[in-house]
Image (cartoon, rainbow, N blue to C red; front, side, top):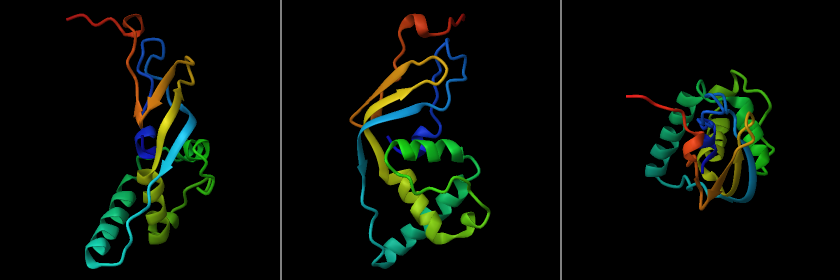
Length: 140
């Protein structure tokens, strides 16, 4: 599970009432994929796309949640506050892309801050299956 994915996840059970965010990470296995090298022209195009992508999602990222999640996965280098200057710094945007896309929770637990409900993560896939009694009643 990528840190970008985690930044949008919440507990949607009836008990959480849509307020189960942010999920706390307890990591037991983390994988950091190597970024692709930027040695040829195709990779320069990729580099430009990565910078543009990262720049475009800055406004929707919950920065404090990202910093906390990265810390739970052993990454303590993100600045506590995102500044305007950082959003124009290509080196920072490349590094942030790497954190968002290449740092992955492989095994661990996501815990709802409201209910304490734990969701296991196995092979990078969070299991959000709820028991029937945890679901809201829906009438058609």
